[in-house]
Length: 501
Image 1 (cartoon, rainbow, N blue to C red):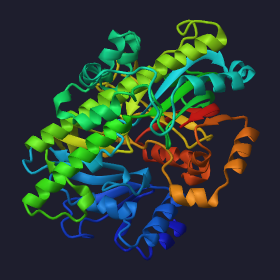
Image 2 (image 1 turned 180 degrees about the vertical axis):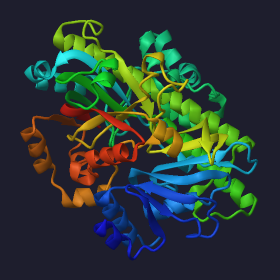
Image 3 (image 1 turned 120 degrees about the vertical axis):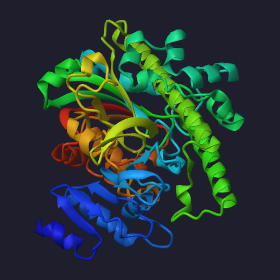
Image 4 (image 1 turned 60 degrees about the horizontal axis):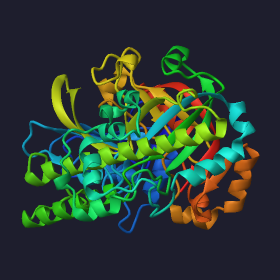
């Protein structure tokens, strides 16, 4: 507590509400409608304060962005920051904000979803052991790197015509199932059953479609990856068993999103919002928070295009799953079903969704922006698959390259305090340029090899950009969420093979 007090001495606008919850009072900035709150432990708070102290020359820290979001029309409850919070475009990454659907002035902000719409994580289980993987580690790593297109501008093995792409945008994983790229049961364990229904392909620009038609089934670059992992530790035996997970088991985690199509959808919407704000002569505390009323024509068009991009991302992970199952079948000489390669869960990180939440003791219908945050619905929520309803929603938390990942479980406390949300990963603590300047690819690859990880990366510079040192400690982030009660630890996963773009 003394350490926290010392850190906050020079930041009088921040107070500590409880052990892991901190508040920026709404009087901190003119126009704040609600408080801003964030979750942190002492090490995570130190990183946030350091970022805030370094911000200058137009660069806004994550804490300032959190306060800025509290000024948006229609926001209710509070502008909320997860423990992996770090600066982003407009909204911080790790920012959650709910807008009152009954307020005609309430807005949707494309920056509150981000450029990689429905960047998310999917986990596949297998009945293989870690030892089975290690015996064929390099063969498997090479086969996966060959089979799944990775890197900037990578093109799919599954090229689509524009009419086919529009089916993807409209139908999501229903399309993947229809054409044989997904199992029926895959849809049951995917958020929204793999299909956002308010998706009208006509609301997606031709430029976005051109960028996306050759990219469904590709990994992309940056922090996107496919990892073959082993279950290293189980914290909740009953919940793990419900998901078919146990210690020593091999799994596959897929982390990717909507690629160039989603980026273009966001860019198009930001341009539209900025022009509309200029016409109304409306000024925002930060132009990157460009927004539009939810019920306006522009708002409805963005939410439709966003839903299309989200459906694209679900299909992207579905096609990568299809190719991964094929690789495993070839390497291990058994069918994918014989290998029990079922999807455990698939969850979105960057999305805006209409949900019901209790705010200030009142049930409200709200549009929840989750940017770099994961839905974490608690037990008995009707949106959850029947098989998981009693335990709560599986939450998939990817670590930085070569470090551990986690499966968490959603809680009632998340429903009560965080709009049913929790963290999404480690969260950057070092810019990509800084990482390239200060870190050495050779040393990083040697360290991964020493820890038994087989890495396949499209470009050497990406290794430095995505090094573990560039990110916060994912275990610290997860522990913070666990202590705060917005999710609980279930399973820890350790990487064996990493394929990156």
